[in-house]
Image (cartoon, rainbow, N blue to C red; front, top):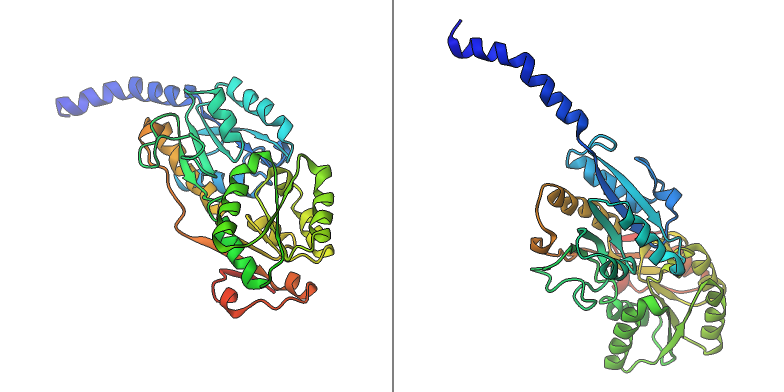
Length: 329
């Protein structure tokens, strides 16, 4: 036996047990996950009920991570109760997690709460405008991830609504204090087109039904529903109220259409949550969020529910159907 091979044989029994012991002692990465509409129970474990968290875990598996061995999640869900968001953010930070994946209003609260824990945006509404990053190309601090451009697309949503229901009556917009940017963008777009808007600001869930009544009383031609967490957590209720009120409604998120709503225009949020895993992977490998450019969506979903249109006796123009990425019959 050659000398090099002999040394290798001698060392092997000593070396490999040490490697195995190091693997066994390695602490799985702890990843905080914050959502606004789901409950914590729906987000928990390796097989969560939450579709967006499930997409994130799928993204981690695709990158070679095994739940329990390589990472675990520390989920907290706001369940559409904004008054609890700050408390949930504080809980996750107190757990000393390695990285946090979050969305919506949770992001601004995280900015106030920590400048050290890496934050991955699953879909930031307006990360530059909200001061979460210095620029999309060079975030510069502890935030990075994906920009959902949810608010920025409100001009397009109003245009779609006007194609569906041409007229001179007002378009109602339901929003809350956490979706101020969405209201502002809608207001600016309406001003450019000379359209009248009716502001229906809500504070909590009890304001939802009166807001629909106000839209009907004002003879609104249609309605824009923002990505307010209070509304999102009650997507089925909102879609049912739109049908009952006979208001053609465009939504910021697809979940409302899946719950029976008429039309939505947005990025594919399942895909953005899956893509968030790539940022987590880079951060766990040692890259700094300050150096990871924010990704903007390049594909958008226009979802049309023909069942909802039929209930409203509404004919969807071919100009909209030809743009649709998904049509629910």
